[in-house]
Image (cartoon, rainbow, N blue to C red):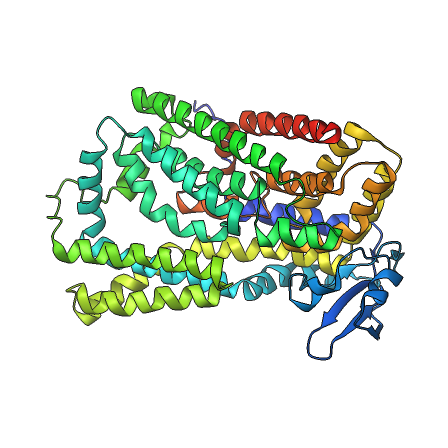
Length: 509
């Protein structure tokens, strides 16, 4: 008689995890009251302020400092005029509960189904970049340039593999702290994952090196215009206020991430069975070291070197454009589309072969593109349900009577929660700072510490938030979310403790 065997539990894919979060947020909209703060935005063409009330009605106010003073917004007028503050700013004390339209079962279902589609539409710039990148990688793989380059690199790094982790994580962390290097790092996975695997590590080491570098850099932002600068501007202080403490966080946080990653990586290199993804070892090696790994590795000739150099130059241009020219994903995609045309001329592939490999490569990253769109759908559900401002209102009332380290600790955890629901650093800054920053004055704490609590709180939750980039990153290498959680939780606890300690020190210095 056959004995029925229990099926081994398999953690759901990134798509299912996001859909579950989407459903949970939808349920929350039935229990959390709808509400909004009034907001104020600056019309640069007409040089006037537009006030939008919670019910959507708008009015015009003079574009002067007196208007800002009238609405208790402690931000210099010049910050609006020069574009430093470019999103609508929440007006303190203006929160109102709103009547939510009655929803039918059909309407709720329609809203749930529309959210991922709208999310994909609103993320089309990032999706386009990912697909173009995938196409380029497919072409370069076909020519054997990656395989030849990896072979040459692995020979040079023999015995010094850990420096690849140290240098890569440090450089990405610097990019994160200076100009918010985050979504752009998706481009690095297909290049670096095979290099790490060839060096004797597992794919999780590559994810940790790239993603942790980005997370700790943006968490410990020092001059990042998308978080620290815009948050400081809306809080009414100079972004250099408190920069010393942020530099300490950057240095200690980056060193902690390097130590944690290298410790795990060396353990895996010495004993592959220690890998948290050991059951995927053969599968991932086959995927990233090419199915034809038993074939002779092509010669690393001039054509292949030139292709890789041009590809690498694309990232240099991308970094410069984002940092100096305020490029967004449309401009970045244009750069890589140009690289596609250049590679078509120098790859040596026939036109049909080139197009075929480009399409195949793009299809390999289609899953990543879908994850990005689905994650954006969660934010859309929250916006439509009008619960973000309600959470802000509740939480701000909860900390108004605290003092010292207790206040900064609670602010830190509040921003962990808000960062889960509002993954946009700039969006969270302009929404929350006019409300949260004045609370620091009430409890006699430097406003710069509220900025730190905001940045470190929303930064730490980005390590695991399904609404952020982690699921898209894991999808790049077919690693499930549960394995990432098992890897990252101890490090997160260390960084949380470090954040709380530094915030407490900041109260007394």
